[in-house]
Length: 254
Image (cartoon, rainbow, N blue to C red; front, side):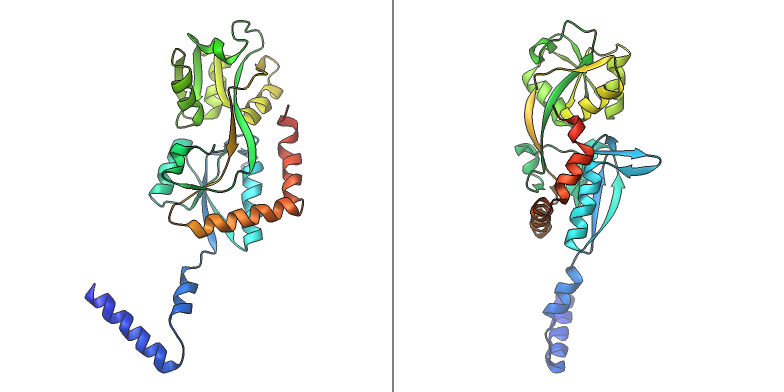
Protein backbone atom coordinates (compact mmCIF):
# COMPACT_ATOMS: atom_id res chain seq x y z
CA UNK A 1 0.00 0.00 0.00
CA UNK A 2 2.85 2.42 0.89
CA UNK A 3 4.57 1.60 -2.41
CA UNK A 4 1.35 2.36 -4.29
CA UNK A 5 0.96 5.71 -2.53
CA UNK A 6 4.55 6.66 -3.34
CA UNK A 7 3.93 5.75 -6.99
CA UNK A 8 0.79 7.93 -7.13
CA UNK A 9 2.67 10.88 -5.58
CA UNK A 10 5.47 10.45 -8.13
CA UNK A 11 2.99 10.40 -11.03
CA UNK A 12 1.30 13.51 -9.69
CA UNK A 13 4.64 15.32 -9.34
CA UNK A 14 5.70 14.39 -12.86
CA UNK A 15 2.30 15.45 -14.21
CA UNK A 16 2.46 18.84 -12.53
CA UNK A 17 5.99 19.40 -13.81
CA UNK A 18 4.86 18.59 -17.34
CA UNK A 19 1.95 21.00 -17.08
CA UNK A 20 -0.97 18.49 -17.08
CA UNK A 21 -2.90 16.36 -14.60
CA UNK A 22 -2.98 12.58 -14.38
CA UNK A 23 -6.77 12.35 -13.85
CA UNK A 24 -7.77 12.43 -17.57
CA UNK A 25 -5.30 9.67 -18.39
CA UNK A 26 -6.59 7.49 -15.58
CA UNK A 27 -10.20 8.12 -16.63
CA UNK A 28 -9.38 7.15 -20.22
CA UNK A 29 -7.76 3.94 -19.02
CA UNK A 30 -11.01 2.99 -17.25
CA UNK A 31 -13.19 3.51 -20.33
CA UNK A 32 -14.85 0.25 -21.44
CA UNK A 33 -14.83 -0.12 -25.23
CA UNK A 34 -15.91 -3.76 -25.23
CA UNK A 35 -18.97 -5.06 -23.37
CA UNK A 36 -18.63 -8.66 -22.24
CA UNK A 37 -22.09 -10.20 -22.63
CA UNK A 38 -23.13 -13.70 -21.57
CA UNK A 39 -26.14 -15.61 -22.89
CA UNK A 40 -27.70 -19.06 -23.00
CA UNK A 41 -28.51 -19.19 -26.71
CA UNK A 42 -31.15 -21.91 -26.50
CA UNK A 43 -34.28 -19.77 -26.27
CA UNK A 44 -35.72 -18.79 -29.67
CA UNK A 45 -36.79 -16.24 -30.75
CA UNK A 46 -34.69 -14.32 -28.19
CA UNK A 47 -31.34 -16.10 -28.52
CA UNK A 48 -30.40 -19.26 -30.37
CA UNK A 49 -27.97 -20.67 -32.92
CA UNK A 50 -28.90 -20.97 -36.58
CA UNK A 51 -26.45 -22.33 -39.14
CA UNK A 52 -23.74 -22.10 -36.50
CA UNK A 53 -24.40 -18.40 -35.86
CA UNK A 54 -25.75 -16.82 -32.69
CA UNK A 55 -28.91 -14.87 -33.52
CA UNK A 56 -32.30 -13.72 -32.19
CA UNK A 57 -34.01 -10.64 -30.77
CA UNK A 58 -31.74 -10.25 -27.72
CA UNK A 59 -28.61 -10.79 -29.78
CA UNK A 60 -29.49 -8.15 -32.36
CA UNK A 61 -30.79 -5.67 -29.77
CA UNK A 62 -27.62 -5.91 -27.67
CA UNK A 63 -25.50 -5.41 -30.79
CA UNK A 64 -27.67 -2.41 -31.72
CA UNK A 65 -27.33 -0.88 -28.25
CA UNK A 66 -23.57 -1.39 -28.29
CA UNK A 67 -23.29 0.25 -31.71
CA UNK A 68 -25.35 3.18 -30.47
CA UNK A 69 -22.99 3.46 -27.48
CA UNK A 70 -19.92 3.26 -29.69
CA UNK A 71 -18.84 -0.06 -28.21
CA UNK A 72 -18.24 -3.63 -29.34
CA UNK A 73 -19.62 -6.86 -27.90
CA UNK A 74 -17.72 -9.92 -26.74
CA UNK A 75 -20.13 -12.86 -26.37
CA UNK A 76 -19.88 -15.77 -23.92
CA UNK A 77 -22.19 -18.81 -24.02
CA UNK A 78 -23.07 -20.44 -20.69
CA UNK A 79 -26.01 -22.20 -19.02
CA UNK A 80 -28.79 -19.91 -17.83
CA UNK A 81 -28.26 -20.82 -14.18
CA UNK A 82 -24.71 -19.40 -14.37
CA UNK A 83 -25.68 -15.95 -15.68
CA UNK A 84 -26.37 -14.13 -12.40
CA UNK A 85 -23.52 -15.82 -10.47
CA UNK A 86 -21.21 -14.95 -13.37
CA UNK A 87 -22.12 -11.28 -13.08
CA UNK A 88 -21.55 -11.33 -9.34
CA UNK A 89 -18.09 -12.87 -9.82
CA UNK A 90 -17.33 -10.34 -12.64
CA UNK A 91 -16.79 -12.96 -15.31
CA UNK A 92 -18.67 -10.69 -17.70
CA UNK A 93 -20.47 -7.33 -17.64
CA UNK A 94 -23.98 -8.01 -18.93
CA UNK A 95 -26.34 -10.99 -19.09
CA UNK A 96 -28.71 -11.10 -22.06
CA UNK A 97 -30.95 -14.14 -22.12
CA UNK A 98 -34.65 -13.23 -21.86
CA UNK A 99 -34.18 -12.57 -18.14
CA UNK A 100 -37.17 -11.48 -16.11
CA UNK A 101 -36.64 -8.57 -13.73
CA UNK A 102 -37.23 -9.77 -10.17
CA UNK A 103 -36.59 -8.25 -6.75
CA UNK A 104 -34.51 -11.26 -5.78
CA UNK A 105 -32.17 -10.71 -8.73
CA UNK A 106 -32.10 -6.95 -8.11
CA UNK A 107 -30.42 -7.60 -4.78
CA UNK A 108 -27.26 -8.82 -6.52
CA UNK A 109 -27.32 -7.23 -10.00
CA UNK A 110 -28.61 -4.09 -11.67
CA UNK A 111 -31.18 -4.15 -14.46
CA UNK A 112 -31.68 -1.91 -17.44
CA UNK A 113 -35.09 -0.43 -18.06
CA UNK A 114 -37.53 -3.13 -19.26
CA UNK A 115 -37.12 -3.73 -22.99
CA UNK A 116 -40.05 -6.07 -23.65
CA UNK A 117 -43.18 -7.30 -21.82
CA UNK A 118 -43.57 -11.02 -21.41
CA UNK A 119 -44.89 -13.58 -19.00
CA UNK A 120 -45.01 -17.24 -18.10
CA UNK A 121 -47.35 -19.59 -19.92
CA UNK A 122 -48.20 -23.28 -19.94
CA UNK A 123 -47.30 -25.44 -22.93
CA UNK A 124 -48.79 -28.91 -23.24
CA UNK A 125 -49.94 -31.41 -25.85
CA UNK A 126 -52.90 -30.34 -27.96
CA UNK A 127 -54.62 -33.58 -26.99
CA UNK A 128 -54.27 -32.91 -23.25
CA UNK A 129 -57.74 -32.16 -21.86
CA UNK A 130 -56.74 -32.41 -18.19
CA UNK A 131 -54.84 -29.09 -18.21
CA UNK A 132 -57.09 -26.23 -19.29
CA UNK A 133 -55.72 -23.49 -17.02
CA UNK A 134 -52.68 -22.93 -14.77
CA UNK A 135 -54.51 -24.15 -11.66
CA UNK A 136 -54.77 -27.59 -13.30
CA UNK A 137 -51.00 -28.02 -12.88
CA UNK A 138 -51.54 -29.29 -9.33
CA UNK A 139 -50.61 -32.96 -9.17
CA UNK A 140 -49.12 -32.91 -12.68
CA UNK A 141 -45.54 -33.37 -13.85
CA UNK A 142 -44.28 -30.00 -15.05
CA UNK A 143 -40.92 -29.37 -16.69
CA UNK A 144 -39.05 -26.09 -16.09
CA UNK A 145 -35.56 -24.81 -16.79
CA UNK A 146 -33.36 -24.68 -13.71
CA UNK A 147 -32.48 -21.21 -12.44
CA UNK A 148 -35.37 -19.49 -14.23
CA UNK A 149 -38.37 -17.56 -12.91
CA UNK A 150 -40.51 -20.48 -14.08
CA UNK A 151 -38.91 -22.85 -11.58
CA UNK A 152 -39.26 -20.43 -8.66
CA UNK A 153 -42.79 -19.40 -9.59
CA UNK A 154 -43.96 -22.99 -9.81
CA UNK A 155 -42.34 -23.78 -6.48
CA UNK A 156 -44.03 -20.85 -4.77
CA UNK A 157 -47.49 -20.80 -6.34
CA UNK A 158 -47.99 -24.39 -7.49
CA UNK A 159 -46.26 -26.49 -4.81
CA UNK A 160 -48.49 -29.49 -5.56
CA UNK A 161 -47.07 -29.76 -9.06
CA UNK A 162 -44.19 -32.19 -9.52
CA UNK A 163 -41.33 -30.08 -10.90
CA UNK A 164 -38.92 -31.64 -13.37
CA UNK A 165 -35.98 -29.26 -13.65
CA UNK A 166 -33.74 -29.48 -16.72
CA UNK A 167 -30.70 -27.57 -17.95
CA UNK A 168 -31.92 -26.47 -21.37
CA UNK A 169 -35.13 -25.07 -22.78
CA UNK A 170 -35.29 -27.70 -25.52
CA UNK A 171 -35.10 -30.52 -22.96
CA UNK A 172 -38.11 -29.02 -21.20
CA UNK A 173 -40.21 -29.13 -24.36
CA UNK A 174 -38.97 -32.58 -25.32
CA UNK A 175 -40.19 -34.05 -22.04
CA UNK A 176 -43.72 -32.86 -22.82
CA UNK A 177 -43.63 -34.24 -26.37
CA UNK A 178 -42.50 -37.71 -25.30
CA UNK A 179 -44.96 -37.81 -22.41
CA UNK A 180 -42.51 -37.71 -19.50
CA UNK A 181 -44.00 -34.38 -18.43
CA UNK A 182 -47.61 -33.24 -18.64
CA UNK A 183 -46.72 -29.62 -19.30
CA UNK A 184 -43.92 -27.07 -19.40
CA UNK A 185 -43.92 -23.57 -17.92
CA UNK A 186 -41.77 -21.00 -19.71
CA UNK A 187 -41.73 -17.56 -21.37
CA UNK A 188 -44.63 -16.77 -23.69
CA UNK A 189 -42.68 -15.87 -26.88
CA UNK A 190 -40.55 -19.02 -26.73
CA UNK A 191 -43.54 -21.27 -26.01
CA UNK A 192 -45.59 -19.82 -28.88
CA UNK A 193 -42.62 -20.05 -31.24
CA UNK A 194 -42.15 -23.72 -30.36
CA UNK A 195 -45.85 -24.59 -30.66
CA UNK A 196 -45.90 -23.05 -34.15
CA UNK A 197 -43.45 -25.67 -35.35
CA UNK A 198 -45.14 -28.55 -33.50
CA UNK A 199 -48.78 -29.13 -34.55
CA UNK A 200 -49.28 -31.51 -31.62
CA UNK A 201 -48.49 -28.83 -29.02
CA UNK A 202 -50.50 -25.89 -27.65
CA UNK A 203 -50.11 -22.90 -25.35
CA UNK A 204 -52.89 -22.16 -22.88
CA UNK A 205 -54.59 -18.83 -23.45
CA UNK A 206 -54.43 -17.84 -19.78
CA UNK A 207 -50.95 -16.76 -18.73
CA UNK A 208 -49.38 -17.93 -15.49
CA UNK A 209 -47.92 -14.48 -14.81
CA UNK A 210 -47.02 -11.12 -16.37
CA UNK A 211 -43.31 -10.28 -16.38
CA UNK A 212 -40.84 -7.76 -17.84
CA UNK A 213 -37.57 -8.57 -19.58
CA UNK A 214 -34.42 -6.61 -18.73
CA UNK A 215 -30.67 -6.88 -19.26
CA UNK A 216 -28.79 -7.73 -16.07
CA UNK A 217 -25.66 -5.67 -15.39
CA UNK A 218 -22.93 -5.94 -12.78
CA UNK A 219 -23.64 -3.90 -9.64
CA UNK A 220 -20.25 -2.20 -9.85
CA UNK A 221 -20.97 -0.84 -13.36
CA UNK A 222 -23.81 1.66 -12.77
CA UNK A 223 -22.55 3.89 -15.58
CA UNK A 224 -22.90 1.03 -18.06
CA UNK A 225 -26.51 0.54 -16.97
CA UNK A 226 -27.18 4.25 -17.53
CA UNK A 227 -25.52 4.16 -20.95
CA UNK A 228 -27.57 1.13 -21.99
CA UNK A 229 -30.79 2.82 -20.84
CA UNK A 230 -29.92 5.93 -22.85
CA UNK A 231 -29.18 3.79 -25.92
CA UNK A 232 -32.43 1.86 -25.45
CA UNK A 233 -34.42 5.10 -25.40
CA UNK A 234 -32.64 6.29 -28.54
CA UNK A 235 -33.31 3.14 -30.59
CA UNK A 236 -36.96 3.20 -29.53
CA UNK A 237 -37.27 6.77 -30.75
CA UNK A 238 -35.54 6.25 -34.09
CA UNK A 239 -37.62 3.19 -35.01
CA UNK A 240 -34.81 0.61 -35.09
CA UNK A 241 -36.18 -1.12 -31.97
CA UNK A 242 -39.61 -1.52 -33.58
CA UNK A 243 -38.00 -3.13 -36.62
CA UNK A 244 -36.41 -5.79 -34.41
CA UNK A 245 -39.70 -6.44 -32.63
CA UNK A 246 -41.43 -6.84 -35.98
CA UNK A 247 -38.69 -9.15 -37.25
CA UNK A 248 -38.47 -11.46 -34.25
CA UNK A 249 -41.53 -11.15 -32.03
CA UNK A 250 -44.56 -10.09 -34.01
CA UNK A 251 -45.50 -13.69 -34.86
CA UNK A 252 -44.97 -14.76 -31.23
CA UNK A 253 -47.56 -12.36 -29.85
CA UNK A 254 -51.23 -13.14 -29.28
